[in-house]
Image (cartoon, rainbow, N blue to C red; front, top):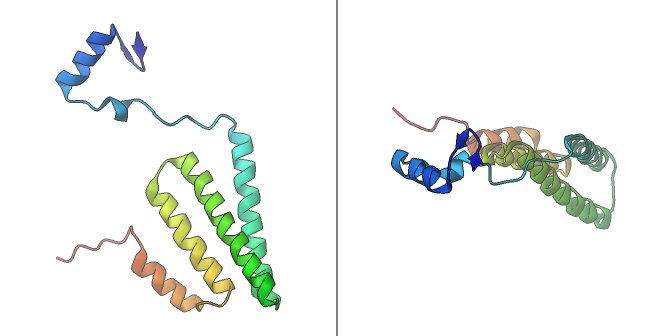
Amino acid sequence: MRIGDIEGTPEEIKDLVDNQGLDIGKYLKATPSITNKKHHNIGLIISIALFLILNICVWTINISETLEKISIVILLALICYITVLIHQRHENYMISGLVILFSIAIMSVCLSFITPKDALQKIDEENPLKNTKEQ
């Protein structure tokens, strides 16, 4: 039996993992990799472009309340789809969280829920990369 760089019987591999205090789940990649990266990247680029184009249209064109509500639903769906694609690609919750944070900030500014200045302040407050240790 072969698992990555480790080769041996199942008992030997189990003993090695147990004796070394290793977590086999961290060693093995449990999630399947992206089978077709080209299609994945094309989908990501198209969804980001749609997100940006829809935001620009909502920001610059005066639309009715009904169209604004429809655009909000579409934008939120695009945010979810973009976040899923990026999380599949990087498998990092920090990156996925930042994508959600920045996307919602962009959407809020374009829909005139908040001003760009308020959005930058909110992002700075919510930034998970910011060192919060006070010394």
